[in-house]
Length: 347
Image 1 (cartoon, helix red, strand yellow):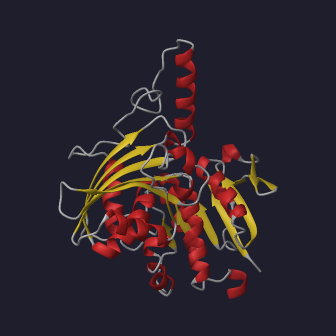
Image 2 (tube, helix red, strand yellow):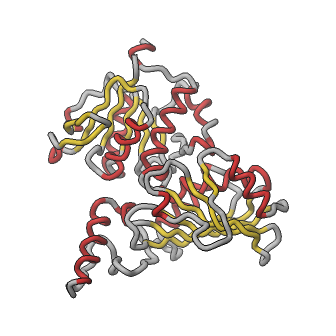
């Protein structure tokens, strides 16, 4: 018997991508259930060659579910993740709500999947696992092999984040503003604080007292939790008029010497990474190439001569995939590989 999977928030951008990837990767599921709010009951969602109809989260019985993949926002996760976990399902949550709880692991399997060994064997575990912020996920995948080799002291990151990171409303706003500008309609910001079409906005999430935004703080806090609390991280998060795919300009300072050639070789051998780094026009990855792909792409790898043991690079990934849906499924796959059995078999 296979696993039973519930996708909470199945009608949203990430929820739909979760269903796509479950089918693409032939996840060993006997049953997949699409759950949403009451206003979306009956809405049809594709799952491979099947069509699922959304069921009501409020009245669903989780007692036979093995994995609940949640992509419904922090408020829903705060209320429902403990309930679902108490029913015995393992919750893999995409929201930011659980990421900073000390008893909840924050996992990118290629980076800190070993944490799941101890977690699975903990009789007191709360059955909740957090998925990182989309920008953090692709960043730490690229940093991990370099950190293992030469120990990163400091990371300076500038993100160029697509509008799909703000959900369907963000995508719609870019589309409508772009069309409107061509017919001389005045673009009216709604989801974003300023015009997003043909513009960039150095502001994602709310501002904090120190001048950083919450999005920038997430990259800092999550990189430390996933990779190494000793790394110093600073970030500027920017929204750009791209539909799907986040990009990052990353500047690193290491404790030990590491050349661009050494970094390139390490990244080529690392899981979840594709290196596209030719020093010629077009010899680098952009969001267009990353869309629909599982890997994180690393380009423009070069030595930074302004600091001792410095490197700079460009990191691109599909934020709806590795940044969200794919990583949740990889967490479930890792748990299965580590011995987590379907409840019907374990009983």
